Structures are given as C-alpha cells and as structure tokens.
Length: 125
Image (spheres, rainbow, N blue to C red):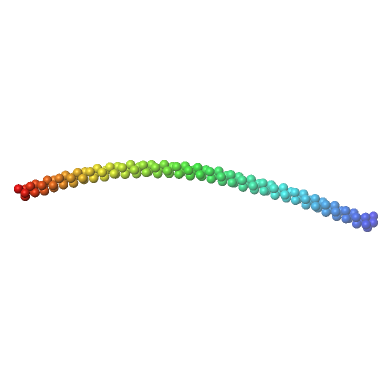
C-alpha cells in the first residue's frame, strides 16, 4: 500500500469517526429533547394539578364562608328580634309608668283645684 492509499484510508476512517460522532450527537440531541419534553410534561401536569387543587380549596372556602355568613345573618336576625322584644317590653313598662304618673298628677291637680275652688268660694262669700 502506498502513501496515497494510506492517506485515503485514514481520511475515510476520519470521516467514519466524524459520522459516528455526528450520529452520537444526534442521538444525544434526540434523548435531550425527549427528556426536555418529559420534564415539560411533568411540570405542566404538576402545575395543572396544583391549580385544580387550589380551585377546589377556594370553592371549599367559599362554601364555608357563605355558610358562616348565613349563620351570622341568622344570629343577627335573632339578636335583633330579641332586642325588639326587650324594647317593646320596656316601652310598655314606660307607658304604664307614665300613665300611672299622669293619673297621680291628675288626681293631685284635681285635689289642688278643688281646694282652690273652695278657698275662692269661701273668700267670695
């Protein structure tokens, strides 16, 4: 074998090695791309699951809050009804006391008027 044949063989070997190297790089690129897709898919699924779970929690909290608001509303209505009842009782008691006081003052005034009329009659005669 002469030098030119040896040179051709060496060139062919270099080309073969370069092709093998390129093929290996291509396979690595495919594997890296597949890994990236798997990672993206996994992250996307994790985010989606987290969002779904948060939505569930938010819905649950909203339901609880609505129930709490309804409970508080019911309690406040009952408290208002109780206060109204107490106020009605107090108003009734105050009316009764005022009527009794007015009667008492009327009686006193009638007595005072009667005494004054007697004095006037006595002084007039």
